[in-house]
Length: 428
Image 1 (spheres, rainbow, N blue to C red):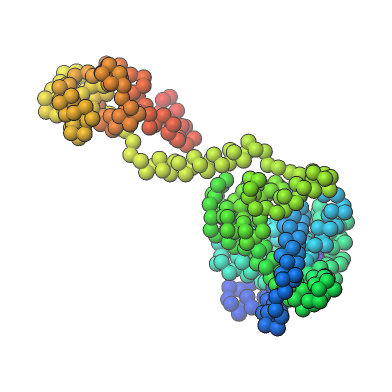
Image 2 (image 1 turned 135 degrees about the vertical axis):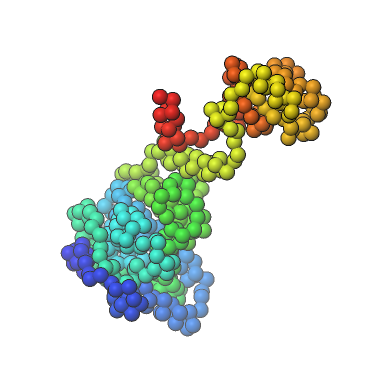
């Protein structure tokens, strides 16, 4: 396929009917996806496993998956590291064993996915049903391909080399090479073809496609929740290290997706190892400060949700202001005590007071600020929080104890910027 055809593909709008979708199936992509499945099912009936073939299958799956993730995704889609030319050619060859067309085709859709995430211009469109997110976008020709910059790829000689030889290279690395290794190595020609070839390709297809379906469907959002990508341990396994997707969409040029050393990310380990021995000359890492900032923002947002479900003390500005005579008069009808300038109705707490009911009853209508703040007992944070919920008024001319204005439970309360702006307006 020529570079021009890879660069642009604009087709008429697809009518929203199943029959229209069937008629718009991409013959190349549909064949790439369906035929390996059919051959694998047939091959499993006529070929049995050999342990040597199984070991080779696992090794070759690891090698080609690492090459695909490191090459097609981290390198050619996001420029996350700078390899030497020998390494880049090697990645291009083994990544072709995924049987997923050219790096230009793949990077074009993937860059559009990032640029137009969750919109109608997103090729994967995570808001559609799971099956469309998984393989529908791949097998059905898109109505319109949104523009993305691919100039860096078209000026790359490795990309041009792969564009020229993609089909012979893909067929050889995907099917003929594993058949030759297993056949010449221990005589298992068919096992090498069906298991290390077609079955491995199917696994790589679904692993790649799960990054567009499962990774946008289930999991946690540790860095941002404005778009659909999520982090999920299981997704990370089935996508071969691409499952910490929320992080990736926040920092796409980071050569890592699993940023912790223990998180499964073979491409990360491979690229770093190559960097250590000089096969990679530069690796891109997101600033640690910005990573922590994004994590903190999400933690604060979650805590704010919890905070909004908690009942807090009435704001002092909203409490009625009464004089001493009124306080004394009201104390004759209900149990009121004065602490730090606030009037508290302790009727609901009389029988729960750890020091006994009589201790409160003996101080009705009195100022017990000194006793509460250590004169008799230095009360706990919980006691301060409970007391703040009993406030019913403010004494006119009363001096509020600086430690009592804000209860301990509200000292680290989360406030949004718009709320601070409103508070500043109210003060001016």
